[in-house]
Amino acid sequence: MTVEVSLEEHAHAVLGSPAACRRVLRALADMEVAGRLDEAKWSSVASELERLRRPAGRSMWRR
Image 1 (tube, rainbow, N blue to C red):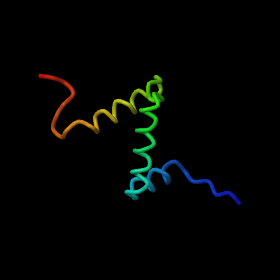
Image 2 (cartoon, helix red, strand yellow):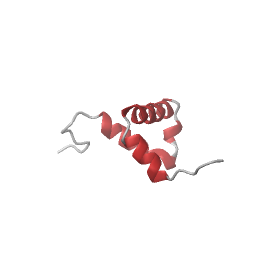
Image 3 (cartoon, rainbow, N blue to C red):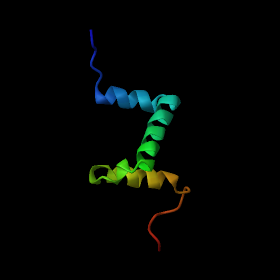
Image 4 (cartoon, rainbow, N blue to C red):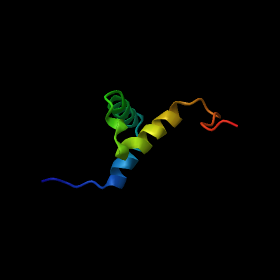
């Protein structure tokens, strides 16, 4: 018997587990290296990865 798990339950599991969160981040990084985040539908994910890599307190906008 298959039990369906909601998207919210998946998200809570990832956010509640450092190991699961790390696996998701690694998968996204691998997708980026493979060029799969270059597709338009993934552009916001690529932008967010870039934001996460910036040192704290640095804006992407120059003043």
